[in-house]
Length: 519
Image (tube, rainbow, N blue to C red; front, side, top):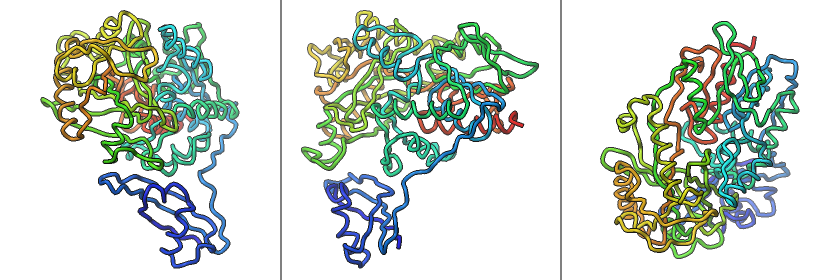
């Protein structure tokens, strides 16, 4: 027999089905020895009080019933002789678009400006070691995109945009751990993601698709009134039935290319701020209401949303047990981001704390119109680089010092491997950002006692939260509103924010390409 069951248990009981067996037997009124298997299907943490509970959804098997295999299987048919589609970008949106094209009988040709994930690791090491940023191979560009080095957070609120469970199943099929099918806030981990990304590439190649690295797009090709291909920096020209543009929010040259070709763009809201890092033990004590999280609880996360002077100030991309990394895509800029390994087992917790920026806030860049947000981002990133002595060191300031406007004479230990330099960030960040951040931190400190502390450090700048540009598309066909055959997709197009929503958008764009041009 199979029985579905919900239980609320303590962390130790949730850690192993051995501890669950007597509870399940008592709940079902059967003998423990009659239970063949207990499979955890759903798991979430309720830490609202000191008496922390783990909520579990279980499948219980007894009477000789065999447990069902976790996850789903996917078949990718041979599309080597099918109609080609050009997919620009090998991040979550591009890779999932490619897989979906294969499932629906079209051949993806994926072009990626950066390197394969294994080669990319060497360029990332050079940023840490030598402060050298390769503009085509870094934390933002390369196989897997920014998602490869972002902790692999798989939580999204974009439930109306596609099948979240399907995205998780595809990732699981390609090597992600079972836990992503269970946890309320699943994550893969930056140490596991490269293997998953490699397996996705292998699926594309095995099915007859193509994946081209070191292939930067410099022009678009039209046939009649429709975009059908791209020209690469090498001079090679690739053509197909349509172009799925999934280049991510840091590919500023692509926005410039579209503008040059007369393809319309729109300014949109985005967010800018800092990354704050605390000792993980401190965040654990705040969130779990105890001195130590103990053996059975994971590193604690947090989420804040405040309103300050008419703008949202909120946490973004929170990484428990994680590290802060240099995420610039140009040698003369400085950007920070966060990531965590699958075990979330470092001594640090970090999160972006950012301020909403709207197009009307950027009047000083008004002559750039659609590019005002990009100009604002770039100005801040170059200023941050300058404040770090033209290096990939991160400007830093103790949190209370930042709020009170004092220069930090010393800095706490940090996970940021290139290193930190003390900087008066409260002074050089724009007032509309600095003042709101300082007030926002005060409000967060009142909500979470101990959060506002000089044990924590802010680093700058956190500027790549989302694209400040949207590439407008038809709400039904997902084609660009004026450029037939062009399907703007994912974060870079302004329609997603994170791995799962980008992957869902990639699948939707692939489905529309097949619907319109696959016959």
